Length: 176
Image (tube, rainbow, N blue to C red; front, side):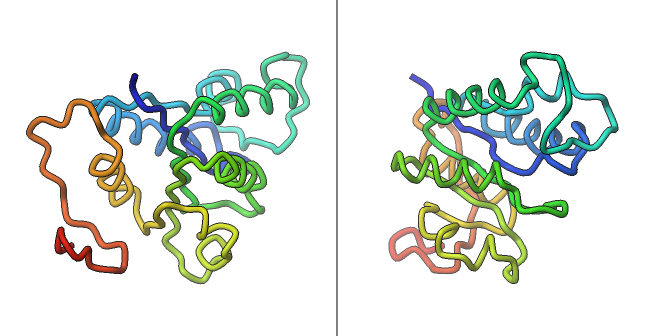
């Protein structure tokens, strides 16, 4: 059975296009290695108005876009995911409540959480409740992709040559 990666990250304050771009790139990069990608934008991205910033609470009559539907869809995805990939780079104004909740939820299930946070001065990079449950914290998405492919890919790895990446400490065996 293929492993599922849930793509966590800010949506509120971004347009659907902005919130979807990195998620589409992640899927294009990781799906060929046998990962199944779960994105919260798979529904929201189709139903929200293009170019309009996403609100924390959308006033809508569309059942799939109401708070309970979004919450339970995300809970279903998180319950069925193996790895949470959370991109906290380019966060608009606001606390990323949904992302923080999702990190805590998967941490409580003892699932892999991988964070991308480039700016060391942010609380996302400094607060132990963010960094301690993370299996790894990276500056860039590409570093996280390599880490996932190297450590979690069990399918479609023939011919794969891992790139060197820096997690701040040299690995004693691999030398990077």
